[in-house]
Amino acid sequence: MTTSTSETGDVTGTTDKDYNLIWFTESCLSNVLRLDLYIQDAERAGDSDLVDLFRRAQAESRKGAEEGKKMLAGRLRG
Image (cartoon, rainbow, N blue to C red; front, side):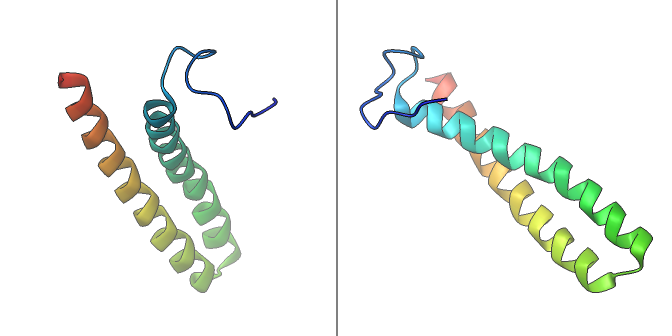
């Protein structure tokens, strides 16, 4: 995929700032799911330090997703 610094929503039909917020929220949610797998792997390996790291990262991703969802909801309401 080619990214242009001049894309302003003409291609997607969604302005950059709105698209970026949607992307950010989806990425945070996706990261929460991916980190769940990493936590399981670390638990199976008995690596509690890694489990802790991944859980902290997951909590931050969840926090970002919640903030993104709230902001999206407010903007969709008008």
